[in-house]
Image (cartoon, rainbow, N blue to C red; front, side, top):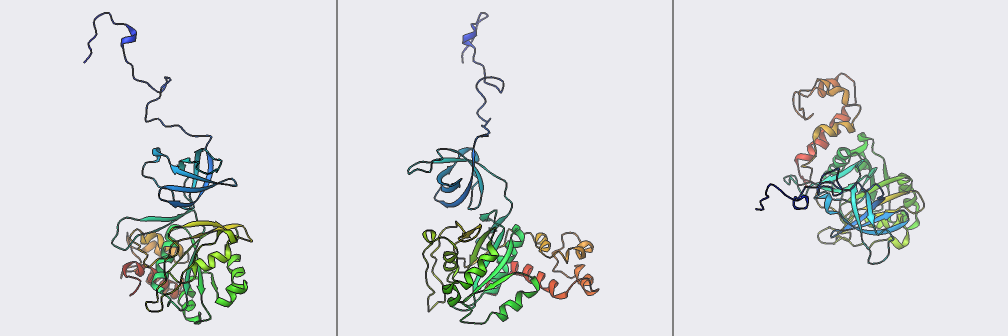
Length: 336
């Protein structure tokens, strides 16, 4: 330890930098007011492909963001080399506030939630009517995740040439969810693509579905030719599709304004992160009836006030049944 006498020289005294000095403390970070805005298109092993203006820029997350991760659909602030040239790398210094979030967990016992997509306006739940067989429980879970995350759901039913859509549509009729039914012939002719495109125009739409339902085939028909992805097939023995999409990717919508986000095929959709109290807001006609519910009511228990409220004729009983079916999907697996 250095000791000073009575007559010390100013140069011998070490002073700590402060906010008013010319050397800020290390915890004071620059605000990056000159950072450019960008859209995250895909994430691959720590490298993020972003759209900045009309340029595609490769970037990495700045250390100052800590563990906060950017996902596809995030609006971000970027500094550094924004030329988009080969072997250049920019830095993401800020992740803007998200308007919506699609989350899932690996299973219902997994406490770690994964953000799949950010800032999407709509969730297109794609399911085949046959080959493979539809899985209503998985559809229910996707709908709950959409309602919970602030996304508007859209049902896209494929392969109607193999099985009729009436039975499945009847199951979701009381939810008032928009839908599009497609067949293989209509996809080839472009008629089905036009109907789907009308539902996507002006929006950012995330596509989710079980492997082998034709999700990526449909996405390829909606995006420019040079941006199309590889597709797989359904195993004739297991009835399961092969994962051809391994990471989420945002693609511009061809022939209209908007974006489509293709996500990897799912075989499970955990809802451990979902708060049941948020699902009720997807049923605005039932919300007034919850005023008499006990605190922390799950809306699926004996003393729920919704039973008497609906019995008095304030809402359609089928709507209450649909709400409880979706809430119950959190407590059972997709195969039940």
